[in-house]
Length: 336
Image (cartoon, rainbow, N blue to C red; front, top):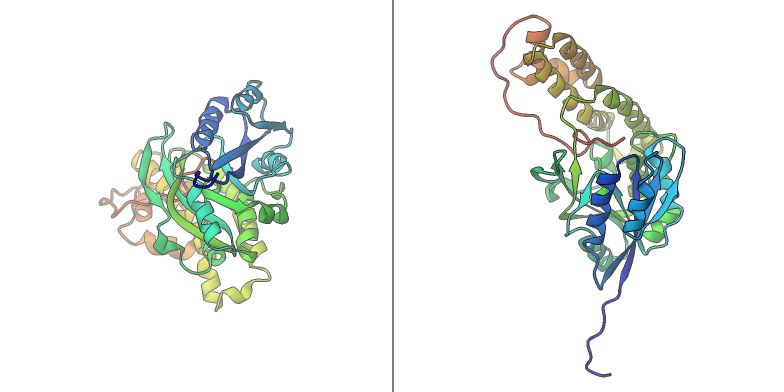
């Protein structure tokens, strides 16, 4: 009848969740998805599982999700199970040990509604400890997101997949994640997206990310760096015109390595000051290999790497180093 309020159009978002043997955390993740549904928004939850926990399927059913299992290792295999089944107007993602904020999704969709050329939108993340207690401010800030996002990504910006929303038809056109990439398959997929499509950014804290303590997962970081390096050169090939000079490209490469560099600098500093000199020396060698120019400069300054080197290599006590090393989405993440 005339004059009656018009019901809002309900948007359908397919949410891709990969999980492995973390049913309690998965329950928190799925609850955070359902918590922001409303008359204007509903979620098709698609969970890909490559774990062995028998209760995982029951957790997914508890939240009305669609469950699929694979024996293949790696997060991309689990995500691809879900990507194959998505039917929504949009697709979003969440890792099983993270949670969405109540402000996620709607600002992303609003940006795409306002500009039909925008194919995807990245939001901000909040770092947290293992108990989801927030650490620091939302990241990144708007000022860091100017210019060519593809170039920014290859220079060291790793958009957290839980703060990413993509138009469904664009995501289906991109295809699946590369299952050969046990690490950084989501970054590779996002690079394929931003290389070809206009991407927006909303300064909205969208996901709370659990992190491991700094310096506690060296082997994982050394394995990851191989995939990051492979993906970097994969996407540079054919796109060299986007860097005006070789020096710009070299800075981009070291920018992509910085997240690992800072991890090993912090690890070296903490181990040296805790008396683990052998562990500190291993971390120092890793930092030197990742960014030789920066590491060599730091060795002779009042820096954390210099302090660690004086203690662990030369047996000298040093003055306190200046400043703290900031975390990044990738450095503090426990994801593979």
